[in-house]
Length: 162
Ligand SMILES: CC(C)(COP(=O)(O)OP(=O)(O)OC[C@H]1O[C@@H](n2cnc3c(N)ncnc32)[C@H](O)[C@@H]1OP(=O)(O)O)[C@@H](O)C(=O)NCCC(=O)NCCS
Image 1: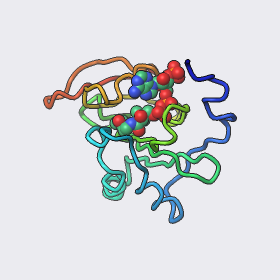
Image 2: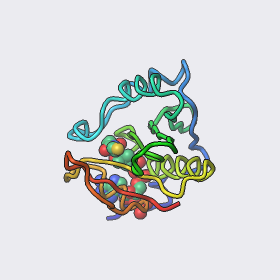
Image 3: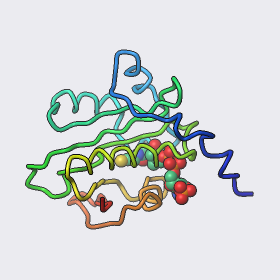
Image 4: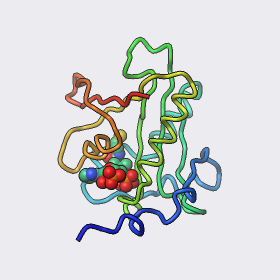
């Protein structure tokens, strides 16, 4: 039987919020666990944090909090001067804790990042991901992305019009 949306989704979506990484949330962000098989589709959060540290002008790393719990991580990259369209406003990486997947946390994080991109004047948000059954393609399609190309390494490039 399909889960009842009203109870399956967070009872109150307004409980979810994005916050900048802080001394309190960084450890929880680094220890978010994924479902078996998903690790191959996303680099560890610690890599993103290191990238954000060396790209402070363009990286936008945020944790997703449900009350006091860190339930996800998302990092955007906003680089209007990039020579590559697909790197100007993009989701660099995101992951939702295994036990919190399927409750709308990922959709909330993408919507918040899309709002940030829109407020910075971007007209599209892009994402790159590995195709594959356990990968995030169905999620990105569900939240409105459509494929626009492929990288030289065979990753799908998808875009969301803002
Ligand atoms: C991809 C990921 C971020 C999705 O997060 P989530 O919180 O589980 O997604 P949501 O609950 O917000 O789902 C939003 C929509 O996507 C759909 N969806 C999510 N995962 C899906 C899947 N594997 N297959 C089909 N649909 C899926 C949901 O059904 C939902 O649709 P609806 O709103 O129309 O009912 C999460 O599964 C994850 O962390 N995966 C591992 C890391 C990864 O692949 N990251 C992306 C690399 S850039």
